[in-house]
Length: 311
View (cartoon, one colour):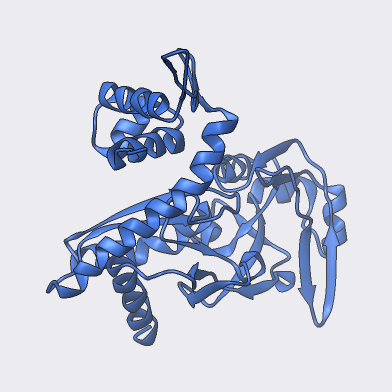
């Protein structure tokens, strides 16, 4: 069976984007062209019965969405890493160029897209004009190869063992708690983490449904609390809503110190329990150690290492 590589790429683009229009935007093609390519692939992967070709359905299409069938999900799981390897192999030619070129895809948490990459990305793209950077920001931990990415950014506790990790961004960060001065004037200023149990707290949970406790540390004493409050948001994407609510006086928010610092400086928020804020190691750029490193990724790794040396 001879399958066109372009048809396979079309299927992967649509499957990852969960739609023909979004797949066309991501791949630079047209929605109609992707639809025809997927239809052709389904026919080629089908079976012949009574002299009639029966296609195998890879995608269930409705007017509003595109959903992988079981066959489509199985194909994507095997095909994504394979196509990434093909792209990497072809990218070896980049080593003979004066400047590396191509696409670099990163999977990162929203916090890294907001707090780590802004100080790196503009300078990197200025240094390597032939590289196109694609950043996918999400909180769920994914297989970067299966997701079609070259590398990702995660914190140490969420790294897989077979990954190579390179420090990126600040090496020490802290979680901070804060509220508006008006809220604290009305309800009092907590003196101990357990005092938060009597306050309106604006909580966050991961897309998986897990809701981490608020953790504090001082003088070797670690305190974990599960306060309640009027607002629960998805960590990352909806964190700004919790910040806005805190500024409006709704309650106390807990988030990265760097995320809240502009509001401390403006006076919109006031630090709460600052002597108890817990520090933790900064994030890492990670990538699989079992595959070739593409020229754009190698350039990015070298760039952040040099940036760290001059920090």
